[in-house]
Image (cartoon, rainbow, N blue to C red):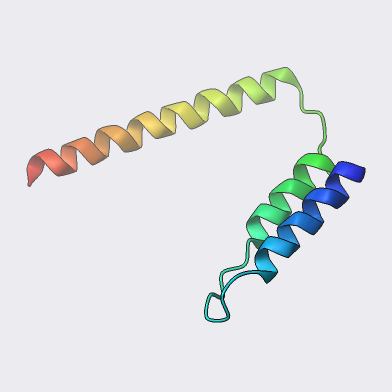
Length: 73
């Protein structure tokens, strides 16, 4: 829990140091950190493996489509 507090403070400090015109805030990163440290629920290994296989298959499909698109030009 202490690590979460430190990470949240460091992220907020880094966001505060941005230039005034830079409106990009790392809310997604803060959400990811909170999810991984606080809200993490242990998933069954079968789910993790299924998700990994699906993600890698999707990446390969996207890579193949990208190469085909570039080759057509």
